[in-house]
Length: 400
Image 1: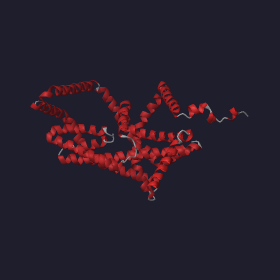
Image 2 (image 1 turned 135 degrees about the vertical axis):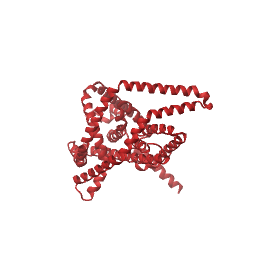
Image 3 (image 1 turned 30 degrees about the vertical axis):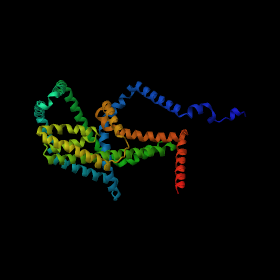
Image 4 (image 1 turned 120 degrees about the vertical axis):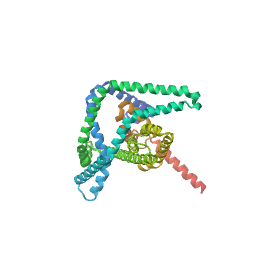
């Protein structure tokens, strides 16, 4: 046997210059990713039936998933006390029904009355805001800035008029879409309890059944990935809903204390919108600021102070205690996710962008860890760490 035949694969130029070169491997992987995206873009029309199917089942699945993560801890607790799983689920369902009866009979009428009155009086409120803004512009101290401010207000008014005209032209179409949306929501609300029941009862068997059909070598890593994704989603849903409830209660109490009209309704709206990170708080401010201007400058100052106090309490105490750093996603990443997903997929994108990103991040981390072990391109990290530790030990010995 010649020396050439004895040469191992690792000694070949192909391995040295391509497989063992991190830059080349990174370029190849990037090219494959972009090629895959390009191919999927060209055959996107083949997936339209699948997307239509997903749009139909999306709402009941999302509702069932949120309720699953909210009710599962309580069901597990009841089951740990010796109660059968099915009976535990029925007990929790009974508690939910009692809560809904109480809310419909007590809280919902108040919110409905306040919301109806606010919408009915909204034109008068807007007129009052315009009047007070005009009076504010007549202040002698704003003479130098009057033209700029007036131009900005005229632009806003022109856009408001165009939106109103567009709404009146498309009212019939929107009414049909609204009726269709109400029908979809109604069907989703009816179907969701059944989906939720089977999720709660058979979730363990679903996971085991999925893992059982996989090849033996894949079972352990995929089970680990599914467990990590489940933890991420569970922590996110439970944390976001808990923070939203606390924020709604805080706003309702503080708005009521200062005497703001529609305090409970504004508090509930702020709590619901708070489930959209960063953007939700800004959107919740809009109707509250309008009402603050209507009720006078002092009320506007009080409302702004309440927002500052609430944001401080939420940012420094509530969110760190409830959510902590479970998702480990940087705030800038969250902002980009919301902007991109919102512009591409609308409301669904805003609500689902962060949990989907967290799930993809778990999968990507698992794949990268596997690649580090298989490729053999990252042995330097261990050597560097060992050397650093040895140096630290040597320094400590010298000091002693």
